[in-house]
Length: 505
Image 1: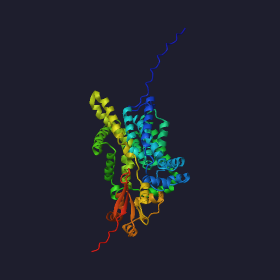
Image 2: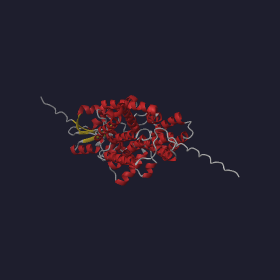
Image 3: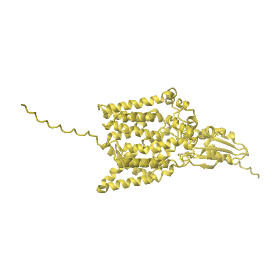
Image 4: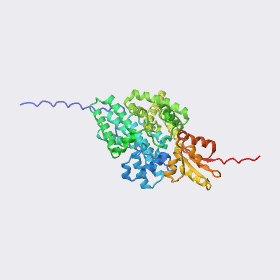
């Protein structure tokens, strides 16, 4: 009789799959969802006041040249570099549904703007603590700069939202073993739509490719997934542009700029030095304390850069390289360096800055946590106090035209020049003379009647029509200024001085 061998001891349980440091589990808690919902609603509430106030030049061009087109024609037309295809498609649908108005035209930008803080939080949750992520998202929600762009009928808030989602997906694909087809699809779709919003999104794809090439090309699983995502995102963008490729390619290869270029002479607006000074001026206007506050924020931000470089260099590369590639590409292409081309980086900048503050406050030892949270709350409240600076008309073409028509006497002549031509003629339907030189202005001036001229964006006007500027300074008075929230966008109404009465001896 044989005896059965005793059972072998069971094998030890397999250790749980290790998740790399800094990669939380994908699910959000109920409290997080509630906080995120309140943040989005609060952001939307800040973006609705004054949404219907005066349109500025680029918005008017978007409405007249694109949003008013039939849907089929809009999908197959690319008329200029000023075209933001995804936004104009959404603006067309919005104005078709709600009627043509400034608020309906801007509604897609406002909705993307309200969603932007949520995307920043989701990204921050995978590269930072929950407190840091929520602080960065809240700062974006109350930022006057972001509110202004959320009330701008252009694609920039959509680009920020989609670029942030693409970065979130790429971080997950590179660092999280649990990321699979869902993240791959999120990256491909958000990247393709970002490209369809604005072609500068291609520079972020290039930056992501550089990160993959340096850090993950040899990784068998993560590297392969990330590469497939890059390819699918790029192909998706090409497919979306396929109906307009015959017109797109010649326009992108040309050196002509949109008529709404509101900047100094060409030697300045293509200079990185001009870009830096202009961006500093814009940022200082939206930060409490102006340049002093900006200097403090820059110091804290530098601390954040150092911390990310030590702790999460891949995340830092994904935050910084898109901006570096954008500058390099635009300079190489000899294109204008508009600060708005870098607006999509806002969420990344805030995450780095908040990391800097939490690191600085961390030096307080046992008081670090209360100091971190108190400082975050003060920053949100302080930045929120500037939110109202974004509200109001960007430009007041309609009001200026109505004023002149009410003030002009029978027989008076009203003229436009440079960037008042298109809005007054194409949008408001006035058939007033357009000035091209001081000679054309002199030809309108007649004894016994007054000549009125509408101007805007004086720096550009000096470059485009210096003779007109000189004659206006010598012979005209400023009758009324209609201020706008866009820099240099005040509409100035000038009237000719009465001819001097001859004196008799």
